[in-house]
Image (spheres, rainbow, N blue to C red):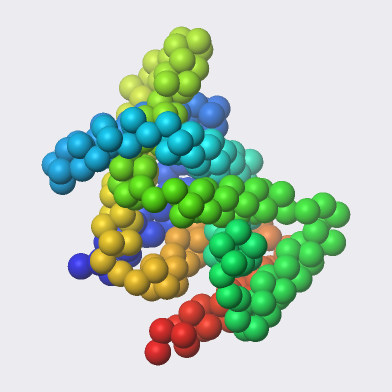
Length: 280
């Protein structure tokens, strides 16, 4: 069952660019606001149904924990905003490679912050991925900042959540709750924004929650049932489908960039191989 939950969450996230492309006429910050706000009741209802509401209230009384969750909320909000922004400017493929790079960045942060051991093969994987990033920078004359911001924000988010022990579902619920206040204020200032332009746009913005709340719940359930390394390997379904979505959306990638992505894929393959080798 855990594998099915993981597959479900990563497939939904993977094809999300195809849906978010339907609201390209809406400012990315506004799309992110609706994505979070409409997900909040879904997560809150699930927390109540699974008996986690009391834990949610207790966590809210811990000032140190709330500060950590507020910081984590800021990083994941930036991550979601950049992802939506990338789709709107035709850089879905670059965003997807941010999620490819993320586990390798997480390994490096684990060594620096938590003094975790990095195997020689993982160092090699990180070096190969870095070469791929450098190739893109040389070809385009600039760093692939979208991929780097996506990887960095998601990695720092993971570090913060690891440093402060709070249940995954309770943590996600607090993150959505903390973000909802500023986002509601923003929508109030802009008079509701594009939500009131037409019925179709309103329904699409509400539908953004389908690619946030539901897969988040499925991911939480998968993480509780599966080994962390298993979830890590299955995670690559997400950026792979995002890359395919980019091609479906008509993004054109030059041969040098595709070659650089191939190098990054090789680094990821080494990383996945090492994870599976250590589990056997």
